[in-house]
Length: 304
Image 1 (cartoon, rainbow, N blue to C red):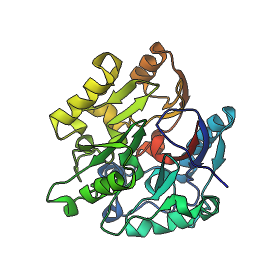
Image 2: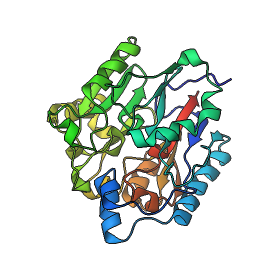
Image 3: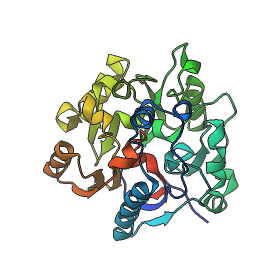
Image 4: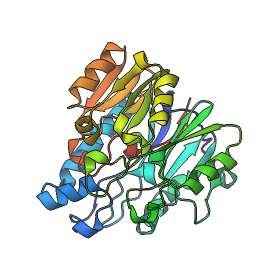
């Protein structure tokens, strides 16, 4: 059995689910795109090839091996994009929450049944239908749970709006011992530089007290300023719109002092090393064309 434990984003990782790019299917039609960045690459004829994405994910798996992390992979489904395991479920403390995701992605959860079967069923939550929530929007941070959301009346019109106010309230109710802090995110169906698909597209803690952030990802200035004050301006790395588009916020921590990052994130990787982090650089630029990166591809199950 697996004794789940995830209390924050950066403690030493023991067990993780890493998605897979195998048999991910043909290039989607424009109307099948889930986000503006995928749409952009579908239209431009630059949508990533399966072989390149498989290669990138294997490079990620090698880093986990290097650090002795136990890695589960989903059962490979035919013609199904299973890269972003963060979307299908996430762990807070000792409990796994199944995400209420887009209905046509339900089979992705079935593909990790071999992992789910190792978890005490009393430690799995299945939110009701009206609760929309995805793992990219949910960040346990010690006493806090940070959640990205969009509560505009036009929520149903945005396929890029993934966590609703019912999702925030559900987490608040299920984890009463935590302080739940929500952040309104900027959404766009057409402009990937104006769209924060999830909270981890415009913000991420690293180490014990540092963070990467993109101001324009937040709709409410005061909420962005709360984060800056919480971490301290001197501990924050601000990224620009182009760096958000490249997914610079979406790195992944294997330990408080080890960060896996994309090899082209030159400015960020220099800053991380200046702060004393070991930076494991891997190629992930092809996967980023789908609007997700390193954090999106992982579902941590156990951290120290």
